[in-house]
Image 1 (spheres, rainbow, N blue to C red):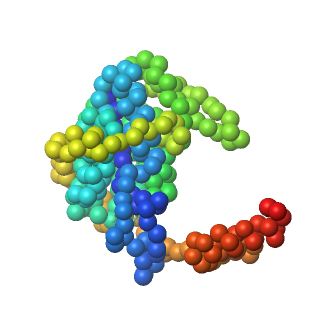
Image 2: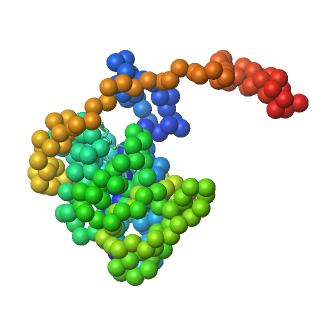
Image 3: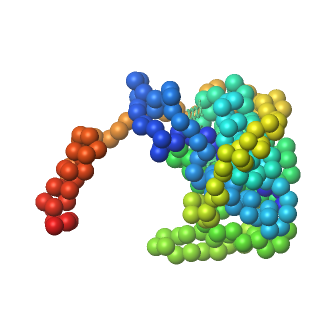
Length: 263
Ligand SMILES: Cc1cc2nc3c(=O)[nH]c(=O)nc-3n(C[C@H](O)[C@H](O)[C@H](O)COP(=O)(O)OP(=O)(O)OC[C@H]3O[C@@H](n4cnc5c(N)ncnc54)[C@H](O)[C@@H]3O)c2cc1C
């Protein structure tokens, strides 16, 4: 089975203190530590497990700049067979539809049975999987938390629905699935694994290689404009505890005692 997993390089929330930039249109991106989007890591692990069961190959692709190569190598160290960097100045400033169009062009260049995205990424729109499927006119299942292989034409996918209930669907391939965290336990990637793939050449696909009209993507083609980005004011009933870590811990204990949470 040929599987393509779309992966995104995102700021690592465990490693950064996220601040809004001065004009309030984005977060401050200087000196951030980046990593692979958590949902995408689950999607890659799932793809590797499917390949190991039924054969085939896993390709990871990302739209980004040169720095995004590092997440492709990480996912290759994890077990993906190939990486593709999709990069062009014309892609800068794309909105979700632009990103989906570019990914759709990449899918058409290959012969994939299964295309996986994360259920969401750092911008949190959760839109790429669905738009990608619509552009490609392929069946789609979102927030998938279980995959069972059926045969070379169909797979069975599970989704957690309202109230913690589970549904199972049979879906014809080729298809697009957006993967939910918790579907598996992504394997650990050690430094030795990273070293092993360090010198593998990663092809770069530009707008012209993909037959993408530069005017239809990037800032030129974006019809969604982010106009503001802010931390909402603390609402009534919210206590923001200030101070050093030690002071915060002491104040939290006092607060919990005062409210009867602990004695
Ligand atoms: C007006 C506007 C301008 C923007 N300008 C920029 C910009 O200059 N630079 C920039 O980096 N972003 C930019 N963005 C954000 C960029 O468009 C987002 O990557 C895209 O909208 C996806 O949003 P998301 O993170 O909410 O993805 P979701 O839909 O939540 O992501 C779901 C999944 O889609 C896949 N995916 C998402 N993004 C990528 C990617 N880049 N490569 C491969 N797979 C991917 C992953 O599998 C991911 O798990 C801009 C957005 C807007 C609205």
